[in-house]
Image (tube, rainbow, N blue to C red; front, side):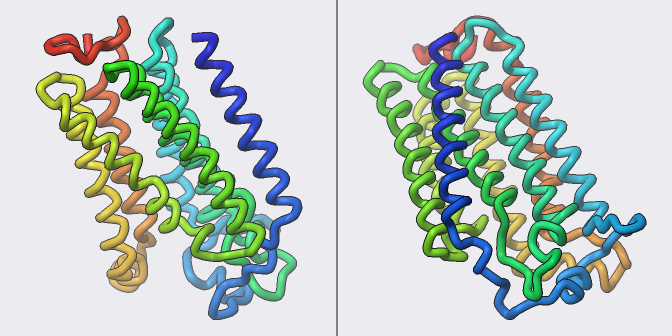
Length: 294
């Protein structure tokens, strides 16, 4: 376990230093929204709560993603409570990073987006450093799941290949995001680009769990990944349908595509709690028949 902790520390330090350097020398501050959007136009897109000089945009959405963040970090701690278990350790790291990333996303996309993208500017920016850091944490968290898979997959050559893929994926995204910040390029720094970048990981998760679906643990994991696909499809359906504007016009309530995604993700996180309980992994799982998760 000490080796795992050392790996996590080295990865976090590498990503942190790289992100700082690219933030310092990048040109993200030149990427303005197209068409150009003023502060007033930006705030008029959604409900805003003001208290004195404090402006919080999308207050209900901010609460929803805060709940998602708390649930996800709690799930990570739930897995980390086990000792000497590589599978649960990496799942715990994944969900803690995922939850922290969700919190940062809530600051940028929801609560304090005005301050990060518009305050003091004549034209609002496409993205900001908080949003980009959230994407970096997301890449780390998803690859932590790959490390968790590596702990339960045999033979050793396959396990080693998964670990190598995780490291390469992290390094590749550091470079990819860095280039996007230096050019700068709005698509390379977008959420949609992030999903495309991480799609090979999701395919690997599904293929591995399908390959070992006769084992209870992998059968449950496969269900979760299939559900995850539908969660993201629901996001894009809500986005393309203009759900937020429609519901606001019809009911006066604010509930957009991000809210749809976050509510479904809360349910998905609870699904992990139920289908992959930490107590099931009190000993390191094996991938031999009938011993997958016990």
